[in-house]
Image (cartoon, rainbow, N blue to C red; front, side):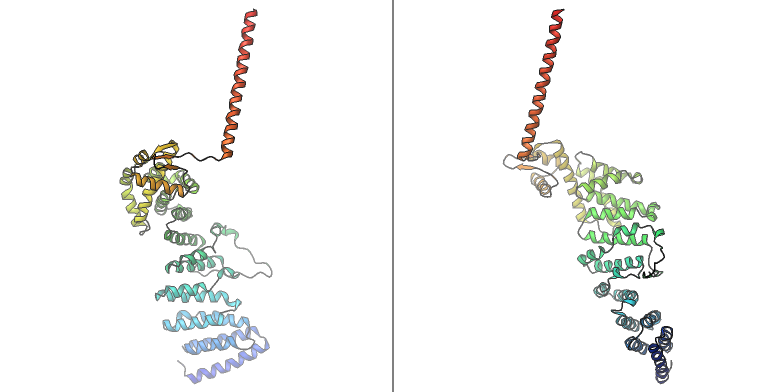
Length: 442
């Protein structure tokens, strides 16, 4: 380590050189002088002096953009060689303050913030790390590679989920369009036109686009699991299932297909759920897990399902899945599974009956009268079913209420049918009479 005096005199000499070069507008000379100053401080392991010089050089009058960029890039190489964590944080913070507000080093600043957030997270300061990452809006950076942008936003989403800030996690996740993962990467490499900003290559530690797709959907599963949105979780697993690396390896796709089946069964009945259910049933891979094929078949068939028998059959599978998913299929999921089966049974009954007593409905559903009424009311409120309950009489009517236009239209149609019948009958009578008269004449 050099003495302070010797180091100061060398820096002073180089600062004079840097001044001359800068005032002459010599870009290459200024960059060299700036980097030489940083290298002297680094070789002397004078970290405090290094930080001071970075600030001084960046604030010099008329400092060239190219010199600031070169200085920040050079100093970033020293981060991993700092002797301790405090020195590392101090250097990152210095570089961050120097690059703040300068569009020509925005890419370097984003990478610095990401490193600082990583350190904060390792120290257990999740909230601080999340706040740091939210300062940067990488979607506006023209020079950043697409995969690096996506990886940065995904890191922002992950930290928000870790601190249980679900609203911000959703806002950030919407910055990524799922269509971006389906882009043809072979067409991506285009030579920049004249005047276009050059997009930098992504660092080596940034995952590929398909790997980022998997990370994105896994984070979205975490987000939707918070609100028990089973259909969206199922769609996320469906997207993971479509990734080539997953689809080609049965050890990977079987657990994913099992999850798709479970979350389909747990999803409330609606057109999207029906569509996914039918497309999953057509999947040839489902024959590898016949147990789940029979479960989906039962749910799609218009027959009343006996809950007790079904639960006894699938209870062990459900428990296995609960352990495999790390607890995301919990007691709430077991209750929802039972509720979905009851809803299925009510829909089946509504298809076969126009009117039924509440007592008989409860018998078919294997529930008490109060429970049957509750589930029926819930389905009517959620508009999954049209029904009216006459409680004094204890009768449920599944007929839809017609408005005056529908009634008039049905009357008009009935009259039209009646007149058609009368006309046909008259024609047949006339025909018979003519035939009879002709026979008499003969």
